[in-house]
Length: 186
Image (cartoon, rainbow, N blue to C red):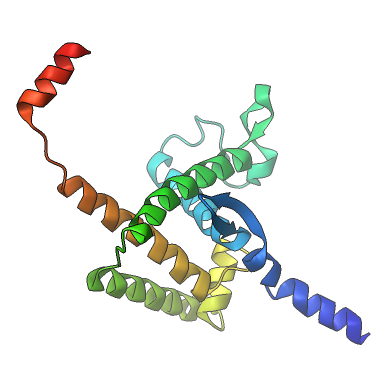
């Protein structure tokens, strides 16, 4: 009986999703829990952007995504589609994040405060919706293994990638004559 309780607590603790590697990007291991953050955000972003067109696109929010086809001819479900989107997002974000870390780029105080505010909002939502903690609310929102720590890491990686990309873009300069010469060549 004790072994069953221990195994049950281990399985429901979220340790496996936090420690299991879902994919590797440029040497960085991304856990299944972290991938869940990208997956759910891909769904939420799509639902926000396409809310007026979802029924036209064949997406029924009352049914599981794994039971609806995005591309029936290829056997691709909406769950597959969003997982592909999440995986692409992870690869793009980590490519920039890893470059930022290699350059010694750090998060601005403004972004740190924004992340802290996001965590505080999660705590408020947890209370508002009757969850005992932010961790349980985050797990209910993003999936098993997700908690305040995984959400903070996810948010920090996202913010560092965004800030670094913006800083790199601001630092780009173009010589009009060189652009015209290249344009003429091609």
